[in-house]
Amino acid sequence: MNKDAFVSGQKTLAILGGGQLGKMLLQCAQTWDINTKVLDPAADAPAQHLTHSFTQGALLDYDTVCSFAKDADVITIEIEHVNTEALAFLESQGKTVHPKPAALRIIQDKGLQRNFYAEQQLPSPNYSLFDNAKAVAAAITAGTLTYPFVQKSRKAGYDGKGVVLVRSEKDLAQLLDTDCVCEDLVDLATEISIIAVRNAKDEVVCYDPVQMDVHSDANLLDELVFPASVDNTIASKAKELAAQIIRAFDICGLLAVEFFVSKDGQLLINEVAPRPHNSGHQTIESCITSQYENHIRGILNFPLGSTKIIQPSVMINVLGEPGFSGPVVYEGLEACLAEEGIKVHIYGKKETRPMRKMGHITIIAPTVEAAKQKAKWVKQTLKVKA
Ligand code: ADP
Image (cartoon, rainbow, N blue to C red; front, side):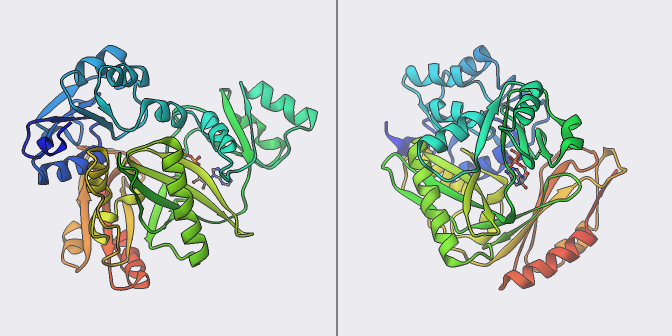
């Protein structure tokens, strides 16, 4: 395939999913004048106005995905909950599909992911798989599963939904009655993510680790600190592992690898996402090449872009204020725009709801400390109301 034909529009890139990640991917595709089409179930998907052709339809429906992508040359995703059988069919018809459906099938299922890491001898928490809550309870009674542990629904969990922390008998009422993974509760020092990128020539580059601080109320990300304040040994080990994992999955484009760093200094894989990821938003302003541009480079087999940091940053989500639902109003936006290094991204969701992800802000500064200070001010200043 002549990949250069993508630039200035002779070939088409199809993207499954038209949310905010799709929107930012399209912003990069536009820079190179790449012809794109997008499929998303929502009529008002954030990405719809940035693509040459928008189709409203279900990402999990075989026929919808096949017919949407049949005239595309390369197919990629911005969300992993898509029909992998359709992707496998498209691949069998000679389309280039990144990530590969075989890898995506494993990644969609937290149980298969844990099995994959075990087979590959990659470090991740000790775990067992169960069919339902009754089987989990029986394992506790039999003494084969001990407190504390974390129960995770195998499929379709995101932003901490589908994750239950079970410390003692009194938490058993919260157990999810579904196919699940139960794994050791890691005594966390911190959580980091590495974004790895690979192309079909098997070149791999990794961004420096970003630290992910979780919001105590909503199990949503509170802020990202970039680069993470972990020692160099952990940082280089995490990059090495991320490169190993992207190759093991045979993925082109991006793979975000989330790690637990335990208090006793272990690095354990939590989960991966084979697409642009929240933990890479800050690469737009903080790095020479953004994760979005590198995804496009990776899937089109172009040389990969430099991941070097230009300036450190903190990224915060713009979340709907509790107590407000309805047409959105951004209070304090002008004050934020008046400050140096505050980069506001509004996703274009018309309605706010408590804790709904409405946008993000990257604060770049000469030092991580200065970015953190400014981020604190932004959190007090910008409020999403209705
Ligand atoms: P999701 O896929 O919904 O983002 P995760 O599996 O990443 O869910 O879990 C959400 C959060 O729960 C993690 O970021 C971490 O803070 C906590 N968590 C999950 N698994 C463990 C674990 N085994 N030990 C300690 N904390 C965990």
